[in-house]
Amino acid sequence: MRNGRDLVDLTERMIYLRSIPVAAELPAPVLKVIASYLVERSFPKGGHLMRQDEPFGALQFLIDGKVSLVRNDVAIGQLAPPQSLGFLAILASSDGTYDAKAETDVKSLELDGDALIELMEDHGELLLATLRYLCDRLLYEIKELPNEALTQRFAGDDYPVPNRPLDLVERVVYLRSLRAFARANLNQLAQMAREIEERRAPAGELLWSAGDPSSHSCILLAGSVECRTPDGRSWVAGPRSVVGGLEAIAGHPRWFSLHAKTPIVAFFDPIDAFVGLLEDDFAMARDFISMLAGELVAMLERKAAQGKSTVGVMRDVSNLGRVPVGA
Image (cartoon, rainbow, N blue to C red; front, side, top):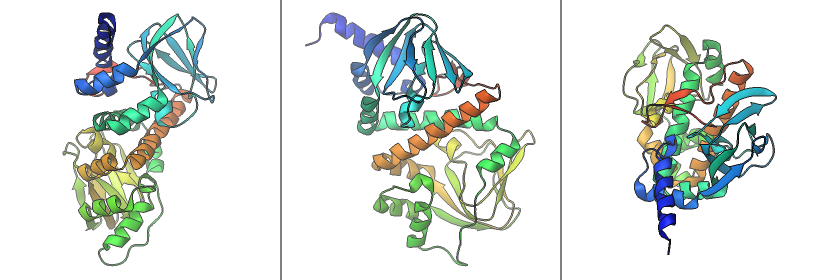
């Protein structure tokens, strides 16, 4: 049986977790389970919490002190409580993403990486919170990209589409060709394929407007679409790209209008169906989350190399208001 001090520690840890974006909206029973896995750690000034490209297996929730981050000899920024270190590396299934050095004596609560993945598999609330957080973070980074970078992001090759609606097998085959669905369970993928809407639109048709609710993503098979923001930016997305999925998962309205630039064939995938697939297929969810986290790490690195580091900046994530994001 726990003694009184242990119970106080557990409660204090649950309260602390509420200040972390991913855990901010988790139900108390899930918070309690996570808190029970946390171990207190200390790092002396000058010590390393992480080394770039070396094995790394634990998430550090900072409770005291400051940590500096360097990647490829480029300063990324600093972390301080209640930020965390290692979340993206664990999710991306990578080695250390930074050289993380204690600028002062540092205290943290440590969560083993394998335990984090097991908790995500056992608790759907944590899985969904992690998914939404990553989409939130990526959405902020993408919104700040120049037009040419956005067009490169969404470029793709034509997919051969028959001059008729695709049948169920053809839908599943196409979805399986996309990275996000490469390892999806075929039965579950077939169920999602039944729920998607195939749309064929002429050039110039408005598919959605900025500010509209984002209840689905647009998966392009053939043709291209133009995205236009209210501030006058625009870029083109081509075949084999998925448009509008990040804001749909994160629960944000559309931040750009979408027009068919050429005649298109596209799947409009209800985001609830996609999220449901992830909840039912953890292997696919794990792959998808790893892909998002890896993309976010790469984007942060590119921005840092350009002198535009966004680690530690204030972001409105997980309904916490503006909070400094971790790494």
